[in-house]
Image (cartoon, rainbow, N blue to C red):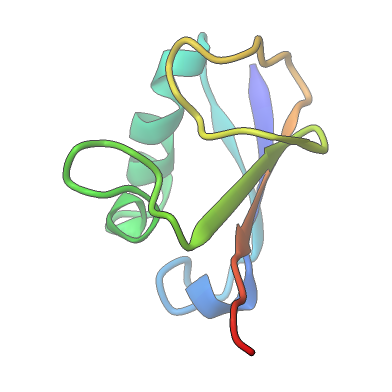
Length: 90
């Protein structure tokens, strides 16, 4: 499956100013490995050492919130993953 991926500008140094791209996977459980293969070092900015998505990173798959766990909802060919930097303050 070809999956679209969109990154926030804050990640542009890690993704080489490529804010849009694609990954190829056969199943959902391959997403993290495919992201790391396409953009080495990226997963360190998205996931913590236990494999959970970092709290300041939001992720949407086809406009639904998603934490990219292996047992999450199905992803289909043509799906789009969007990473968003969470903003807080007062």
